[in-house]
Image (cartoon, rainbow, N blue to C red; front, side, top):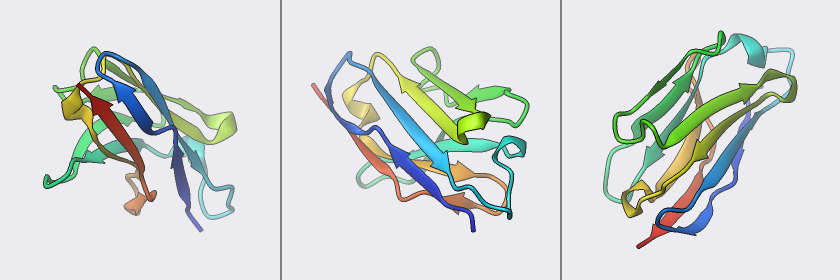
Length: 116
């Protein structure tokens, strides 16, 4: 079974930082290190949007709105993908979801609230 569990959300002032983590389940059904992983977010009243992607080889891609502020990384030994978020803005307020591209698996999300 594929299970993704996010953590690290919270309330932070504008200009602050947070680091989100997503741990993938240990399973015989999948190998974390061979999978591309994403972070999405969904703000209140808006559609879910792709924030960042990291491939199995470590290549990364970012939404224009977070380039230069957010960094996605992974630690395959810990089956974990991270999202380091710096210079946070109120418009970054959203529920952040971890996603495995293959098979379209989602975590339950972690909430980030950025106050002005």
